[in-house]
Each structure stands twice: as structure tokens, then as C-alpha cells.
Length: 152
Image 1 (spheres, rainbow, N blue to C red):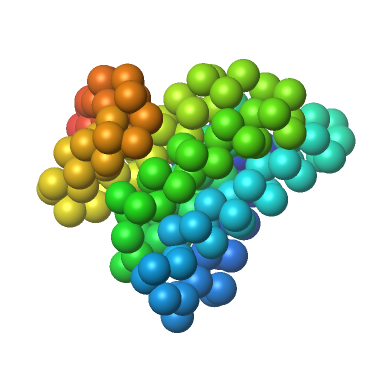
Image 2 (image 1 turned 90 degrees about the horizontal axis):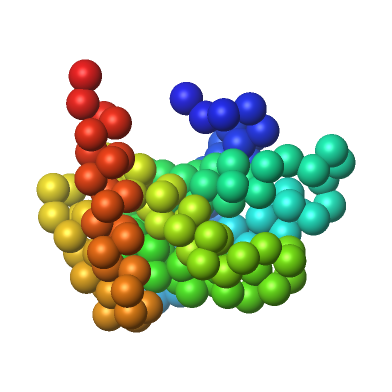
């Protein structure tokens, strides 16, 4: 269950993705999903009053984006890369730390990766490390925690 404040953003992001991107071409779906995430995060972090916890907002939105993409069978590896890539620009726009935002996005990505096919986490880790040096290890730790959290 999501923390207070994050749940609404997660649900909103998932609903937007499942309704708007279901028929999107595979080549553009991941970038479009990252654009949707960006708009929600900027609004949630900068323009919502009272200002919600940015960590909860970013993780909630990214979980919603990823779970929506999982539901409509879109490329989760490409979506993960696009989400993490968008965090640098978003950090500037929201006056937050880029490294923290990347970590928050990867935390959400890991939480959804454990719900996908068995090799999804490893594929995401490899793609993140390839695109953003040093993120593979951080994602691996977040993935291990997400896997542990799912155990009964």
C-alpha cells in the first residue's frame, strides 16, 4: 500500500498510462510515459498545496507509470531508462537533488520489476548501468530490497 499522498499520484499515473498509451507505437511509448511522469511530478512537487513529500511523489508517480506499462505490455526496460533520464531535468525544474530523484525513480522501478518476468530486473539493471554509469549497483540493491519486501 502506498503512503499518504503518493497513492493518488500512483493511481493517476497508472490510469493515464493505461488509457492513453495502450495503442501507442512501441517506439514512442517509453518516451511518452516519461513525459507523463514529468508533468505529474512537476505539478505534484511544485504546485500542489500543501507540498507533498517529494520522495513519495516521485516514487508514487514512477510506480504508477511502470505498473501501467506492465499492464499494457509495453517495454519496461526502455521505460525505466527514460524515467531515470528525465530525473536530471526534473531535478532542475523542481529544485531537488538529481541523485536523490534518480534513486527514488529506481526505487519505484525496482518495486514494479519484481512483478514482471523473472529476467526483468536483470535487464533493467543492465540497461541502467549502460546508460548511467554507477546506477547498476544502486538498482541491484533496490531490487534486492523490493524482492525481500515481497516475501511473506
